[in-house]
Every structure is written in C-alpha cells, then in structure tokens.
Image 1 (cartoon, rainbow, N blue to C red):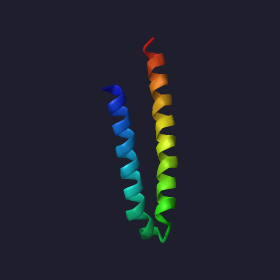
Image 2: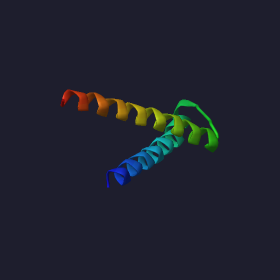
Image 3: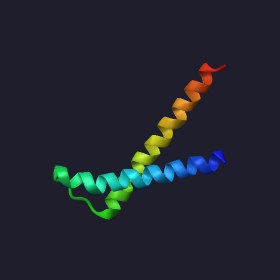
Image 4: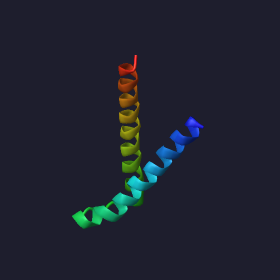
Amino acid sequence: MSLVEAITNVAVGFGVATSTQIVVFPWFGLEVSLGEHLALGAVFTAVSIARSYTLRRVFNGFGR
C-alpha cells in the first residue's frame, strides 16, 4: 500500500501543480501552451520527488 500511496501522491501533486499553473500564470501575464504546462508540471514533480526522497533519507538517518 505504500507504493500505491506514493504513486497517488505524485499523481495528485502533478494535477494540482499543473492546474494551479493554468489558473495562476495568466494573472502574471504568462501565456504558455498546454504542453508547456505539462512539461513544467513534470519538472516540478521530479523536483518534489527528489526533495521528498532526500528528506526521508535524512530523517531516517537521524533515527539510527
């Protein structure tokens, strides 16, 4: 179930990030295509996964 949770978390995060970009970017005068929104969402998702993994490793190291 941990794998299902992790995949769900990533999928929801990607959806939230992309949806937020689609809504917020025009407020700042940024016009990008749907493909660009999806690519940016993928980059932010990869960074989020790396951050989460790194922090988990750091905190697991404290527990030893």
